[in-house]
Image (cartoon, rainbow, N blue to C red; front, top):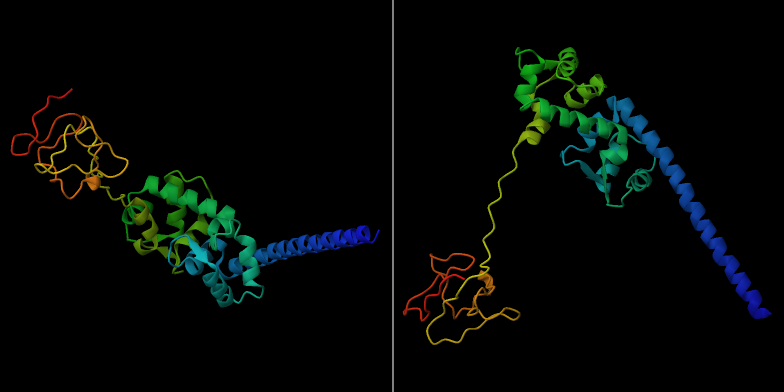
Length: 267
């Protein structure tokens, strides 16, 4: 009976600990949600929108993410009175140790992403966008020109004033080419990758020095076999490098008595 009582007491203690842990996590999530809303209100009051605050202060490097140290520092700069670490943990859904605008304000993130895609499809770059929106006048765009120009080129996402403020980070009431660097980056063509070196697959013969034993790496068939797989990195130092006349898929690339290898026809 004593053992059973002890077991029951132990089980009750574990249940109580588990319940307390779940209750703590729940309370932290509730508080994190409340303080996240409070932070959004602070940013909106200071900058007009979370999007503008994110682009201006939080994501100054423009890489689309911010770590916890940067987040806490910037929360203090905007005089946020809550617990930045608690808010960071609540917003960091994927536990990556970094926050994106999508995690801070999903709706404004989706709006910005749609706007960037629209601009990339409609304009060739920052100068092209400015010229088309202002009708070819000065190299800057006013708020009214921005709104009318977006409608003229087919923007249907709305929130033009919010987007204008998010682009006009200097706050002077005009958009210039320097405010549109993100568009030039978006339009910059991806660098062309050089083709990787071809693997010598199906090489008919592998020329080695005369009278030297052929040494191959473990797992590879001897290179003397027809259509053997002999990657360049597996060539042994006792073997001479391929001749310039090497061809793939059947043609022998080394021949003649000076190599000690006779000619073979392609199968």
